[in-house]
Length: 334
Image 1 (cartoon, rainbow, N blue to C red):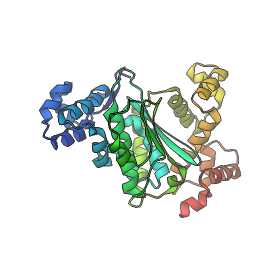
Image 2 (image 1 turned 60 degrees about the vertical axis):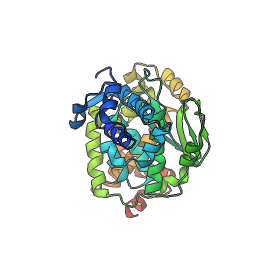
Image 3 (image 1 turned 90 degrees about the vertical axis):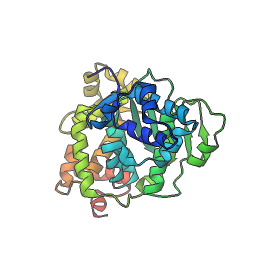
Image 4 (image 1 turned 135 degrees about the vertical axis):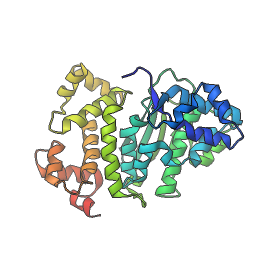
């Protein structure tokens, strides 16, 4: 795998088009960041992620819009994010949309990661820059969370509002646009880019989702994930191993530690530093995979329980009820 963090080249198109609305020529942006425009016409091309992040900053400067990222995120079509965007649009619920975006984000870019967590009554999305060489990223991170808020309002509830939004970059002189966009307290100079919201909105359905298309896209994304795996953190490495081992393997703490070249005690300590544990991650992965498997009408519930490492179907039913408030059969019939 290349040491360079990359992103799909088509990611630049939405920035170029939005900047053109301000009268900024595409050529001036290409020149500002040294981007070869011919790459944008190849669906398989990838460019350095740092180049894309810099493109946001240059577009803000040339357009003289100090809120370029926010304004773009407020108008961008999720389809601009290619496969990951289409999966979000066709997920059955908001929870599954966030779960899929977090899982498949590395297909779009391995230079940043999405982490989706929830412990009722609060859920959160964390957007982390894996490419540590990137220092200035205000407009990329603001575009990202503005896109999330806009997506939720357009797809599930026009009144959807986060509890708090936190950014790593410094506070701008005027934050009126941030407050208008997010409709909640916005904090700056924080340790992480994090959007927190009420977990009870996770069950909201995405009305126009196509279940058949979702299943096809999900399978395709799983295939691509092997080609573009996450590169961001120990958490993602552990999640990836758990997901692989659950399918008839051994997802135990000891087994995962061996694969990472760590002792079980060291791995557990490192996970605690991230505010989680092996058991928590195993539970999350089982939850995510259960929702995915139950979308397959030909897969028996007892088979799902086996694939998730449950020795008895009754144990799986209890866990699923805890995760969703429903039994597997109730979910399938809803």
